[in-house]
Every structure is written in structure tokens, then in C-alpha cells.
Image (cartoon, helix red, strand yellow):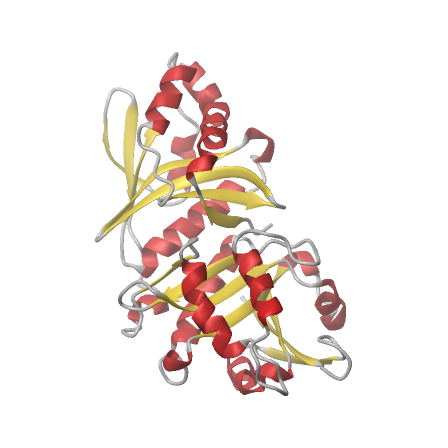
Length: 326
């Protein structure tokens, strides 16, 4: 199951505090440190919605993490999964995606875990090494094993998860591409729908999408790609086991950064890391006649061409479908 990361807001504070207390209670009681009031005060005094992300599954917040990104080092302040959702590999998926994000920037990830907490084994199992300890906490770091392809692209500022403020900047990119095939007019209703998906709404199939953006040197997004479980019609068309695949959606690159600059390849490489963390074995993508100029990109990057999905975008508007093993 791919979970989505949604940047938090001030209004999320009470929900996140409650989730932190529930998730930490057992570990804190084990070492005789559980104090609900203290746990609340420690979190609320340092809460920063800009660096905190809700972990969302099927439209529900099931956990959250807080990640401080500084030049040269990332610090994971919090990572909690609600007990009802633990044991499903979600924590591991989230941590792998956090490490991939740091690897794209060539940064280590530092964190602290409560002594005697099960979190210590969890972090060690995922490559963290102890660096120091205090009376109650053990400190760890995990260094990137390699520099990912996205980091090698000199045209990029960074690749990261979508933030709320990115949506208004991406409006420019969407208006360059989301146009009627015949009139060339901007399709306002479709742009509005894409923005709601970016903001966390479900699409017509009840799917929730997780987005990555590629930014320029000023941290303004210039490209985006979304991930979700596959559309039922695509899954049936290619006869693949849907739970093992993810679908690539809303692939848009600013026209000034298209062709030969490698932005699409770099962003796709980051998307592949996200998909692998979610234990997907492959990606699916389709493209309609409006985006005929993009078909060559998919022909080059994806492994298999599955032909046309007839009338996918309406009568006579067929979609070409590709798949890629990870």
C-alpha cells in the first residue's frame, strides 16, 4: 500500500498530539516515563507545520513524521504510526522514502530514539548506526550509500514531496499542458480537479495520489509526477496483478525545462524510489492523444508497450499504455 505524504497545517495539531501520545504510550510506560501532559507540551512547543507531514492511507491520517532539512544534514524529529496501522510495513515504507529524499541531496539522516524502545531495533534494521547516548535517548545516523541520479542533474534545485504552496506555482505548468486537443483552450475543470488531488482529495475511483515535484534553483516547482494504485481499466487492459503495481499520473514538466535537460528522467528516478519503498514491482502509465509528443519519452523509459486502451478519454480518444518493472 502506497501512503501519501500531506504537509500538515496548524489545524492538525490536536490530532497529531493525540496520535503521538497513543503511539508512544507503551514505550514510555515501559521505562516509567509516560506523562500525557509532558508529551503534549514537548510536541506543541516545537510543532512546525511546514516540516511536518501527515501519513495518509485511504483518506485517513494514520501517522505523521517531522523532518528538518538543513544543508548537509536532515534530522528526523518524529515518526509515529497509529497502533491500529502498525505491523503492515508502513513505517518501513515511510523511512525508506525519507532516506531516499536525503540521498537525493547527499545528506545523512540523524535521529534520537528512546532507550529500550522498539524503535531502536527498527532504526538499526534500516541502516542507522548509533553515534552517542544519554540517560534516556540513543542517537543514530544513517549516511547515504550513493548519490542518486536526481542529484547529478545540474539543472535541478531539488526533488521533494509536494507542499501546499507548490500547488499555486504548478498552475503555470498545468496551463501549459492541460488544453483541449482541438481548440487549444485551457481546460479549467480538469486543472481544478488535478489541484484537488494535489490537496489530498480522492479521484473518481476513490484513489489518493502522492506527488513529487522537481524544483529549480530557487525552489519553485517546475515539474510534477503523481503515484497511486492503478486505475481498474488499466489493470484489466494489461492483465497485471494490480496490488503489485502503481500508476504514474499527472506527469507535467514546464516547457522551458523540457527536452534534453533530463528533468523528466530525474523526477521519474525519484518516483521509482518511492514506488520501490512501497514494495511495488512495477509502474503503469497511460497517455492520451493530447500528449502525443510525450509518447517517445515513455517508449524510451518504459519496458513494455501494451497498445491502446480504447475510448479511455472518451469516444475516439484512446490511451496508449506502458509498463515498467522496478
